[in-house]
Amino acid sequence: MQVYFTALFLTIAVEFIVCMLYIRSKTLVIFFYAVIINCLTHPAAFYIYSIFSEKSDLNNNFNIYFLIIEIVVFLAEILPIKYLFNISLKKAVLISLSANIATAALSFAF
Image (cartoon, rainbow, N blue to C red; front, side):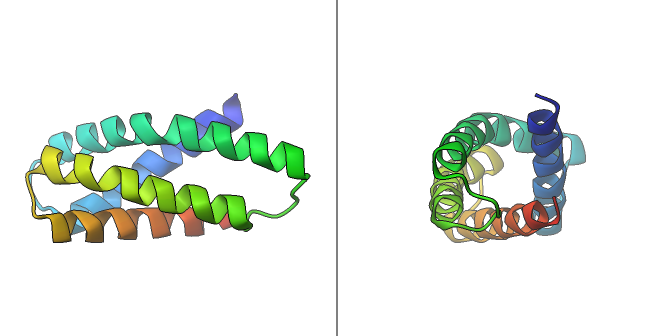
């Protein structure tokens, strides 16, 4: 359980920083939205990846399941980002892509 919460907090922190780079407004609001978005997508992604990695006895972080889950999370976060931050779809796609690339890259460190 500690691994899950560590991953969640790191994901929220990284995605908050990425959002701050693109949206320079109220810091607390951006943090709150980053928490909401990640609390919607992170639990399912972590759970599904855990199931697949146990069944397949995967030893490394990068595999097809990881890639598929990251793509699904990237797509799932676009609309919440667009509507919560009230920004264009293009900017929401860019933020979601940047945030998920950053957190995926960070996952290789752990």
